[in-house]
Length: 97
Image (cartoon, rainbow, N blue to C red; front, side, top):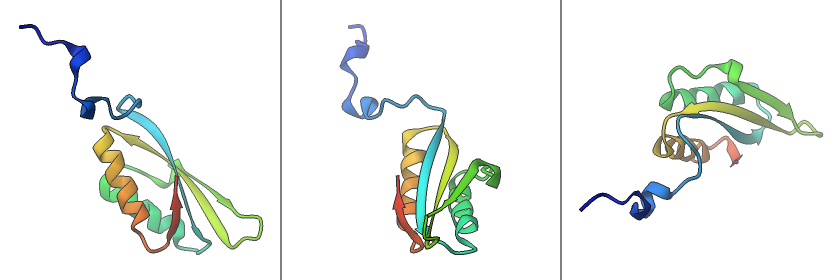
């Protein structure tokens, strides 16, 4: 019997994202001089070639918080999920979108 691609397991259809791709992750936390460096190191645990030029930083209006948009080149959904888990579990991170 021939394999029918329309009968793929749900796990094969979990995402509409095509990999590999550049994916922007927004990370927010309290403004701290080392915040961007901490986030850079967390991402580099999963993507050693990731560099700071792929991070855009914006301070909040009051200056208490900062948001970083980190554009990562990910190869798979599990890799992206691992990065999200590491970022959301970091004590200096308030939100990850």
